[in-house]
Length: 507
Image 1 (cartoon, rainbow, N blue to C red):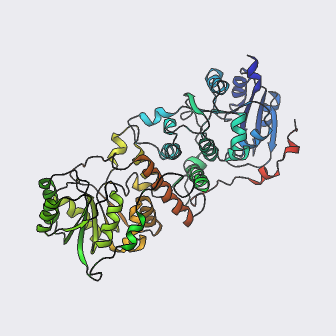
Image 2: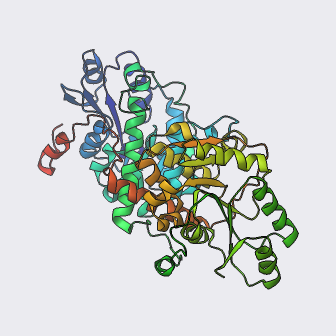
Image 3: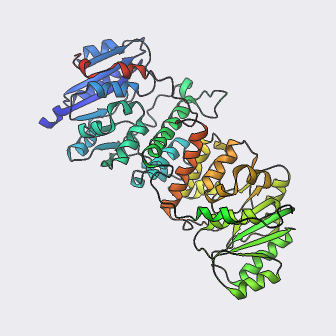
């Protein structure tokens, strides 16, 4: 097929003599325009094999670092289609054609379709979660976990020009640029690279004392965070997503009797979903837990309900703004006087002993007490948006032990100390409040309760949820750096700076 001669195949190589000849034999069956091998840090016979197989060989004595070889290969490539492979994974040429075909059909990027991994009944791997979250943040949900991190993948010459060859040294960043420019990205074929990937203890197993992750995870997470940082740089602290909250409202609200303190407060955010009888039952269970103060933030004018709640010694705050549970919480935080404050919506009906568990954890030193939601990782396949976002935030905060737990819709207790540190206005944007709590290394406790609460996946619009997460990460970057404090993997980026247009004709 004549169009195949437009293909440049790019293979970074470091000590891959074991499989390299077999890999190159398969690639040659594609009849490509060129095979560019970027030999770096090799002390075996990889260079000799590549030369003997008539590849274009670029040699660096020292290891270049993760993905630098991809960018260098792309710089020198002459093809209209660039196909990226690894030097340690043997893939049949028949499995490579779909990636080339997808570009020839007009798509800009063709990725390895690994979404099957997220549909298995297993808890998703953290790397899969960050890939999924990045695609969702850019509105490419249909890509699930498919990513330029994995090989094989192909890109068009047009895509290369749009993302800039340098960005290929950070595959998630290159993908982020492509998504922000609305390029056509597809995943035409599944190639099993997971089981074939060579395990290297120094990067896949060993951990440093400064990180809970192994070397490669630390780099991959930093790469994905830098991709989010790019989005914020381009489109603002919410990544271009809407914000319809009445943020200025808090400026005019002051708590009466500011010096008053009690041990336990509960803030109920009204959504108008429960009858008066059901709401009365919620209040009864709260009172059984020895809660000193109950506040009800009302989103609608219902005199009978409000009078009845006042009869039950509930402080009613008539806000009358519908559909903003997080603003309601922030206002409740202003008025609450408890040393520990429980936030819940009216549908959160737990027995008194469960409320007691949450408060006891706070009184024993936890500044944030969350309900354990890890079961959603085991029961929901693929993972819902809100759980991938919360999991992503915990991975960014280097708290993988917290899994997908976080500030969202389920009841939680925050200490007075934590509220003062994060500020009441941050309560309006849960990821901001959450990452501030992480920033201050405040103790977080996760509690297993006896009752499974309904999953509130419709409580906030997708655009607002994503905007909140990006805003939280924007704050996070302001306190760390564009990689969130993660490693860049000793990449030799200066090598890229030394390349220039006049040096392209080296072969």
